[in-house]
Length: 464
Ligand SMILES: [Zn+2]
Image 1 (tube, rainbow, N blue to C red):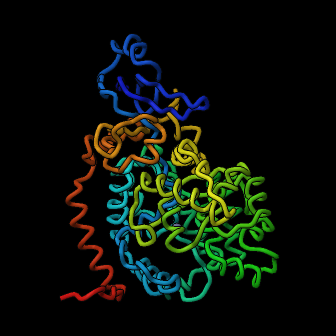
Image 2: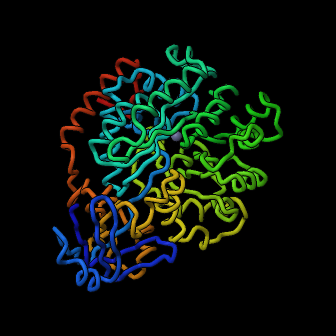
Image 3: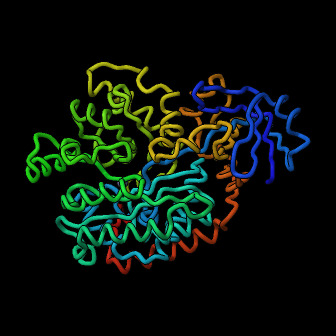
């Protein structure tokens, strides 16, 4: 196995003792971290064994970020649904777009999305539920990323495209079990397959229960949009006869478990925060997308209740920027600002930088049920790492490393990324695909797809 040493780095480990090495070194053997410590010690003990020794010149080394909610197959839909109401967003733009995708579109969309994720330091993501998982898997394998892939799954509800409306709960479970068999633990173990529930308004009870049971049987996770808008809670109260929304109902049918990743979870009350915490449900907070479409999620209350909250970008048509670096910044601001709205007084101490940084790293790993191997830099874990150059204008001077990473760092500060012990971006160059070729293929695929789907975007201002 090849051995590589990275030394002379500020290493932020996010280990249980929150250690930061001011002049640290790390040894990577194969796909794992073999040793970590002070640079001189690491060099003394491992130099003679290493195939490669890299001086990071006081740059910062971090655990790879985890994006716990992203729609990779929506990347070609960036900008097709900006400034429209939710029903237009869903019925007139996103569903026609997704239902007209080919597997090749999904492949190209995931390549394009993956490139943006890597540039922002993401090494692992949780697909929120998209089209053609086999296309996604091909792209993830090629890019060198780590991912939990999930098929978009719906079996009921208003306004579905005809090709989706015919699917039964059994069809949905069957196709996901086939995808699991085909792709789970492939790509050197970097790909896992999860079960998906797009959202409760498009799920029969049979689908919810069969998903719960299939996840138990396959020992995998469930990714679901939960409590996104007040109407959803009202719909659940009316149709399922419970006294509050989706979370209350999911508890009733025993779907609230520690393998559930609940995206958004904006409209939850105190009782529901309590039952989410008790069940060990993970929450993916997508602050930018929530501001666009959903509202303020009670993140501080969830964290105080002991819920594992991580960060997601959501998809390109609901956020536009697929950068977890931007999401850390936005999360810190929104949740401080929300204090005024929720409690009538300011509180700049809400969600401090170290909390937000943990959300993007170790909490992300816990959310995707992978914290035994990723989310922090520790001996025995997978070598998923990010090199940050703090010596350019967005970050200089760095007086307080962690706050600088959350409040100052831009995507542009991220220079290199390692996943599973392999470089997937080096000096800002994506290693395994040609970025220019993907961009041109994506432009071509996106315009073909919009034409097939019959989507036209009204022009703004006075276009001549
Ligand atoms: Zn989503």
